Length: 131
Image (tube, rainbow, N blue to C red; front, top):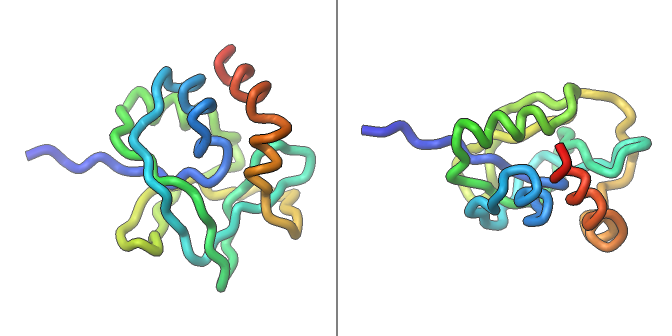
């Protein structure tokens, strides 16, 4: 019997197909999910967000599944040292792993995924493909 593969809650740049394709060479299966008690916070001087605890708030994102061990290694290397891989609960039920921001520089406002998509995604994904 095989052990179930862990899933990943992606709430920032990893929820975009272009970034996943640049990093992994493919877009893993994903579906929309919510993480209660968390928010994707804007960070000072960074284009990407950090997931921080926020009682009464719900972070939206996607649940990535079917990631290989090699792909987990790529994602771990991609994430800043100020993230910690942690297990969280989902509003839809069940638990998954996600990268929680442990660094400082958290802004009061939430990260704006649509602004990122419109202004930065194309160039950002291209840079990810160069790594």
